[in-house]
Length: 251
Ligand code: HEC
Image 1 (cartoon, protein in one colour):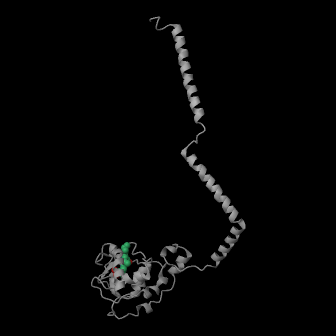
Image 2: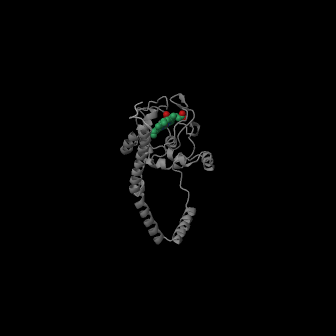
Image 3: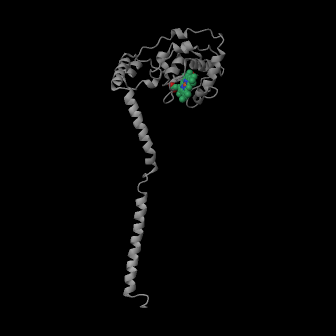
C-alpha cells in the first residue's frame, strides 16, 4: 500500500473530519428546528383556534340568555303536551310493528262495513276525466307488475278482463290499502304469487280513486268510476295484514 495514501496519520485525520462533519450537520438541523418550532403543528390546528373562540362566544351568549330554570320549565310543559297527545290514526302499514300488541289487535279487528262503498253507482255514470288522467300516470307503477296493458305477467295476475277489477269497489280499495296475498283466481286461473302484493296505502285518496277508475275503464274493462270519498271511508283498513281472497266480497 502506498504510504502517502494510507498511513496512521491520514486515518486519524479522516476519522476526525468525518465525525466533525456529522456534528456540523446535527448542529445545522438543531438551528433549523429551533427557528421553526413555534409554527402551528398542522393546518387543522390553525383552523381550530377560531372555531374554539366562536364556540366559547356562543356558549357564553346562550348561558346569558336561557337560564337553566327556563329550560327546566320548558321540559315540563312539553312533557305535559306529550302525555295528553292522542295517538294518530295509522296512515302507513310501516307504523305497525310486526308481532306487537297493536299488530295483533289490527289483525283481529272486525271486518269493515263495505256496504256503503259497494252500493254501486250506475255503470253508465260518466267517469271523472281528471281522475282518469291521474290514474293513467299512477298506473305506471302497477304496470311494472301487472303489465303495460294489464295483461298480467309471471309476477302478477291480469287486470284486463279480471272479474275482481270490474267487481265490488271495496275489494279494490282494500287491496290498495292492505295489499293482497294467498291464492286468488283471476279469469279462471289460480295465482298465488310468493309475497303477494304489498300495500300501496301511501297514495292519497285521489290517487287511489284515480288509478282504480283508470283500471276499471281501460284494457277493455268497463265499470263505474271510484270516488275519493269511497277510499276515505275505508282508510281504517290501513295497518291490517295483507288481505286474502276469502276476505273479499265475491265479484
Ligand atoms: C310489486 C308488484 C305489484 C304492483 C306494483 C302492483 N301489484 Fe297488484 N298484484 C300483485 C300480485 C302479486 C297480485 C296477486 C297477489 C296474490 O297472489 O294473492 C296482485 C293482485 C292485484 C289485484 C287482484 C287480482 C287481479 O288481478 O284482479 C288487483 C285488482 C291489483 N293487484 C291491482 C293493482 C293496482 C291497481 C296496482 C297499482 C296501483 C297494483 N296492483 C300494483 C302485484 C303487484
